[in-house]
Length: 80
Image 1: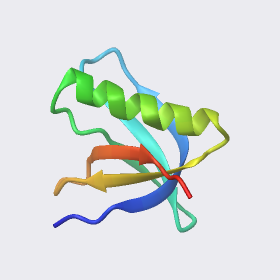
Image 2: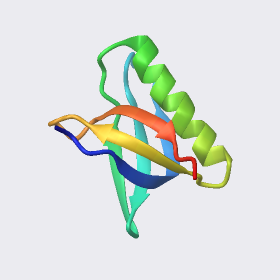
Image 3: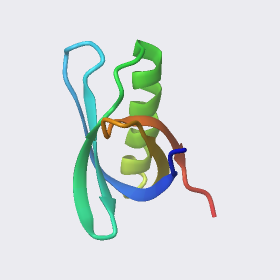
Image 4: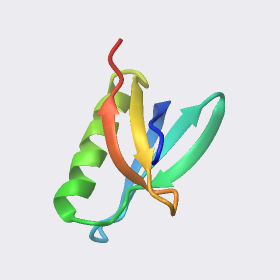
């Protein structure tokens, strides 16, 4: 079973290619680019929108889940 991780969003990146977007996450002081799992257009867009919203709100924290390939499969705002 995969574990949820907590990180802040530093940057987001998308291309004109379908299902191609990435998020720069900072977890424990380390920045890591993670691609969004290209399973479906809606899923990729939804993850990118949540990450962009966190980035716009001054790098708010998010919780995210990775697949075995290290791609983001799910993301949500981290609420205290």
